[in-house]
Length: 139
Image (cartoon, rainbow, N blue to C red; front, side, top):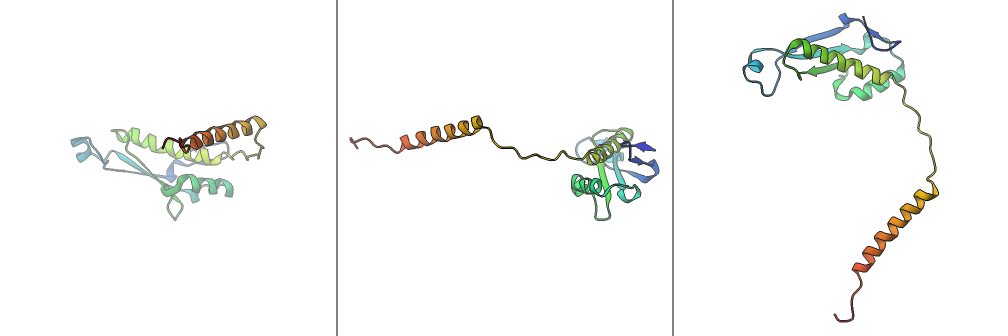
């Protein structure tokens, strides 16, 4: 069992990891060996709160299929073991981030100083543009 948070745990049997050939430069190592790890995790196998599931769906983006399966492709390293560990770490980070409830934003009013700075900047810019338009009587 892998503990994600205090409430969320994943059974290692639920992680489906396959090794495929990596893309990019690397010479014969890329051409011969299947070092890239492709992790598939069905979100339906664990119980999540509806708000956590909503955040997870938004965070996963295109990595989540219509069948609610998260697919993570790890090919950063040259060995299967390190790519496997990297894929699992990225899945755990994604789940931990989804489990954190975002802090609600409180609407605040701008301070008098910030209003004055904004208006001063607008006035300075206006003066610069107005001076471009002045013509002398010699023309």
